[in-house]
Length: 236
Image (cartoon, rainbow, N blue to C red; front, side, top):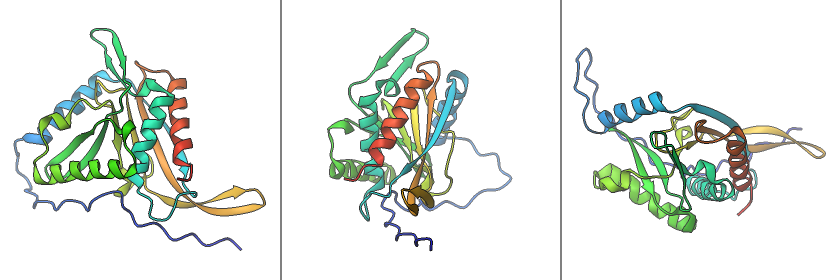
């Protein structure tokens, strides 16, 4: 008989969605604030970046119950960036320069009623899981309370979107220049996987990696993704 799926861990990955203001229909509203900045950054990304996306699955069957998903993701980004620095970089196409970073500053996409914020979690390569969670909570509180200073919303070296907390397994996340790469984590689900001697039901995290092909090769992106998956699949 097929084994029953193990109980899902409590989703400690994201705060509840922010309440939405009532929509005003059939009205041309000026785009201001965060949404205006989103228009500018997405337009620049579309005009400049040559995006390519790789997709794969992380088998997280070895995780402990209740493990902090976002902390694991962010720490795995640091590990993968050390293994393949080409993704943790800035491209300046006008000057013809590429800067690979020793530090790992993760720009975490945070959804809000006002629009999309990208908070910079600096030097995550120096943090343990508890420190990562504390930094993430501070960033989310800062977005919620509108107290996050402007310098904490820029200069990240690589980006992360946890879109799967809402819906969707795979995506083509948008790389915002000068960054070279963004990782997207899809909706966790259970899947039947072949193992020696039969079948088991494992917990799976879909991963999407979009990179700027002007700045990195497919091989570099694939090596980064392999290192990311290997770290995510380890028991802690």
